[in-house]
Length: 190
Image 1 (cartoon, rainbow, N blue to C red):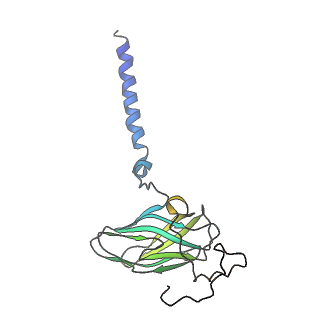
Image 2: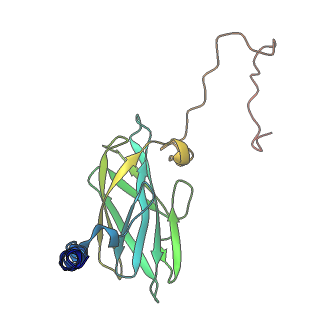
Image 3: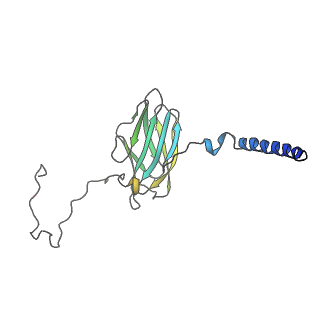
């Protein structure tokens, strides 16, 4: 039994040293300490600002997309989003651009503020580069993805760029059996 102990002690010491050294091998940029976003969008920081779940939603045949994201101002003073640009179209930023301290501001199809990309040159599944500039924080360049308006994103596509044209009268039979009305609508919509 005394013959096993001399072999066991050095083996255990070597195994313990190997485990300790291999844990340090990942360094300060270990994958396990990197920010993780359990979503389709990108998460990134600029000073006290954090951009969460940034992505563009666009139908496959559309030349417009809506930017969906949330900007959280974790700082003690207000900031302002001064501009958004893209390498894949012209960004139309509307609404309030103020980023209040200790608050989150959401961007989507029907939010204030909102951002749409006109002349979109990317399809669902492709990456798109966005550059966000701020009044008090460093600019952020984000490489994110274009997703199709399906599933959780089904209701987040931008509205039409121009008012829709009225439907032309149908030449086929009507479903009620009576001829189509030719009266013009009243100003109150009634």
